[in-house]
Image 1: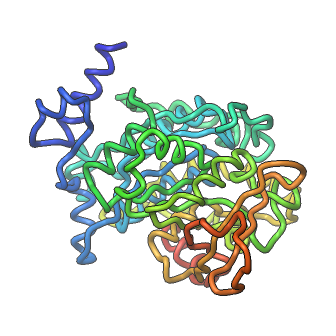
Image 2: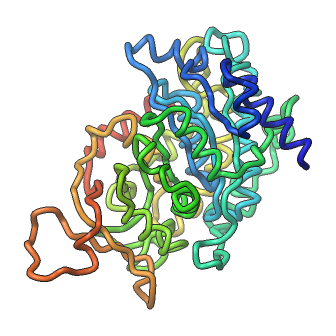
Amino acid sequence: MCKNRARIERSFMRQMCAKSLHKKARNASLEMTTNAPAKADSRAKKQGKSPIKVIIDTDPGIDDAFAVLMSLSCAPELRVLALTSSFGNVRTEKATENCKKLLRIYKSSGSRKGSEDEKGDEDDVVYVAEGSKKALNGKQKEHIADFVHGKDGFGDFEKDKEDLLEAKEDVEVYPGGSAKLMYDLAKTYPGEVTIICLATATNVVNAFREYEDLPKMLRSVVHLGGAYTVSGNVNPAAEANVYADAEAADELYGTHGVDIYAVGLDVTMNVRMTEENLIKMRDTKYVKGRETLTDEERQFLFNSSQFYMNYHIKSLNFRGVLQHDSVCVMTVIHPEMFEWTRARVRVATESFARGMVIMDKEGEKNWSFENAWTERPLMNVALTADFEAIEKALMERFI
C-alpha cells in the first residue's frame, strides 16, 4: 500500500509539478505549478481570461453526471482539478467508481480524438479522491436515492457499459483522501480554487477541520443545498443534500474566512431539460474544435437520463429532467444570472425539522438580543434567478 501510494503521488507531481519535485516528495505534498494544462489555457485564451480552478465534490448521480461532463467538456471557463466523492445518491464507494467512470468516458471519447482540443491532454490530469462514508454524526445515510438514479447511480442501463465505461488506462484514486487533496490544491493555487459541492457538506467540513487554514486559502465554496422559500424534496422541511448531513451544512454555513454561496431548490426546481431537448442532445453530432459534448458523452447521458426522467414523470408529471447540479455549476460560470441574498444561515439538526435551513437576511431586522445567528458570517444565498437565461446557457452547452 505504501509503495502504491508513493507511486501515485510521484506520478501526480511528475505531471503537475515541474519545480521542486524532490522537496515536494519528501514533504508528501501535492503542490503543483501555476502552469495550467495546455487545453484549459488554450480555451481560456480564446476568451481572454484564465479559467476558474474548481474541485467538484460529488455523489454521481445522473444530474451529477451532466454537471461533471459539462464542466470537463464544454465549460472553457472552468479548469477541473479534481473530483472528490461523497455519499448521497449512492454510497461513497460507488460514488468513487462513478467519478472514475465519468473521467474514463471523457478521456476515451473517440470522437474527440485528434481534435485541437486534445493537444496537451497527457498533462491535463483530473484526480479522484474518496471522501467520507459517513455523516459528521457517525451515521451512514439510511436511504440511498436508487429510486431516482438507479442502483448504480447512472440509471442501471446495461447497453454500452463495456464500450463507454472502459478505457485503456484506469483512473487512479489519490490515496491521501479528499481532505488532503483539497488542501494541497488550495495550497498550490492560493486564493484561486473554488470547491463546487454537489453533495453533502461532509467532505468540505472534514477538510476544514483537518486543515484550519484551508478556508482562507480558497476562492470560494459553492454548495448545492437547501430549500429556503419552497418545500423540500425529502420532506416539506428539508432538501436532500442538507438533510443527509445537517450538522455538516450548519458547520459549513458558520465558517469564517471564506466566501460561501448556496443554491437550493428555490432556483434549481425552475430549470428543466425537456424530453425533446434530451433527444436533441443525443442526436446532435460532435464537431471537432467545438467545446461541446462528444457523441459518446451525449449517448451516455441520454441513456442514463431515461431512468431519471421516469422518476420525474411519476413525481412531477414532467417528461424531462431537472438539472440541479448543472445549475449549481452555472453559479460559478455566470453568477450574474442569479440574484444573491446576503444572510446568516442556520440548519436545524434535530426533530422533524432536521435539515431545514433558516436564514436571517442582512439588514432585515436589528435584534435586541444575541441569538444563534448573531455571530454567524454572512453568506450568499440564491433565492431566484434568470431561469430562462440559465436554461438557454445550459442547452447551448448540451446541444
